[in-house]
Length: 310
Image (tube, rainbow, N blue to C red; front, side, top):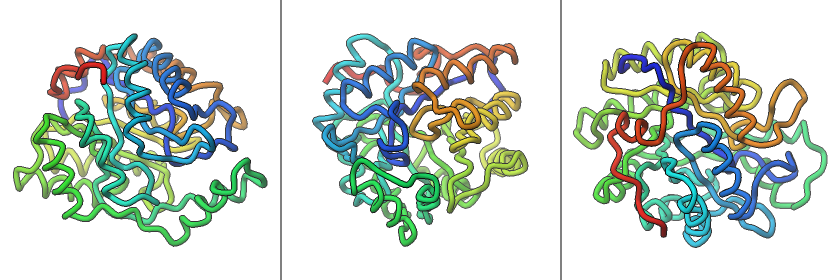
C-alpha cells in the first residue's frame, strides 16, 4: 500500500441499487435530489462522489444517460468534486446497460466490480414488511437466484472502452479472489497503477465484516500490489462507520453514503449521506487526518482533469 497520507480520500455514494425508496425517506431518487445530496456531501469533505441514478417516478435503479447528465449538470455548476460513475449499475442489468453512462460520458473515474459473485439482498425482506412499489419486493426476492456477472471478458471490454477515453477506475473488491483478478489484469498490463482498490465488506456473497476480514484483505493486497495501490474501505449496513474507522486507523481511505448503509447508529436512520460524511470525518480528525481535496485526490489517483459540464 502507498504510504498512509495525512489526508484521507473520502468517497460518498448518495444513492445506488442496494436499497429501495421504501427503506428510508432520506434516499434520494430524482436527479435534483441526488445532485443535492452529492453537493452536501462534497461541501462536508467528500472528495469523490460515486453516482447511480434512479427512475424519478418509482425509484427503480436505471442507467439512463440523460438522468446522469441532469445530475452532473447540477453538481458541476457548484463543485469540483471527482465524479465516479458506476459501471455496476444493478446486478439485475446487462453489462451493456451498466456500462453505457461511463462509455458515453467519459468520467475521470468509474467503478468496476472485479468478479462475478452471488449478490444476496433477500435477507432485507425479513426487516421490511411493506413497500411503496411492487418492483422493490421482486428486486430483493430475485437476489436468491442472482449472479452478478463480471467475467474476465466483461472486465477486459470495460477496461478497453473506458481506458481509451482517459477514465480510471475504483476497483470494487468484495473478496480476496477479486484482488487476485485485479493482480492478473495488472500482470497483463490492462490496468496501471496507482490502483484505487475499494475493499467491500459485509454483503452476502462476499467477504464478511469482521476486523479479521479487513486485515486479511489488506495483507493480501499488500502482497499482490506492494506500493502500487491506494486502499479504501467500504462497510455495508451497520458496519459502515465501524469498518471505515478501522480502515482510517490503518492508513486507508473510506467510503460512506446511503447507497451502502441507511444508518447513523443502532436503529437510527441517517438523515442524509452528509451526516455519514460528517461522522467518518469526526473519526478521521481524531486520528489527525483531514479530508483530501478534489485536486489532491486527482493527484494521488493520477486522474485526468475534471470533464466539463455535460
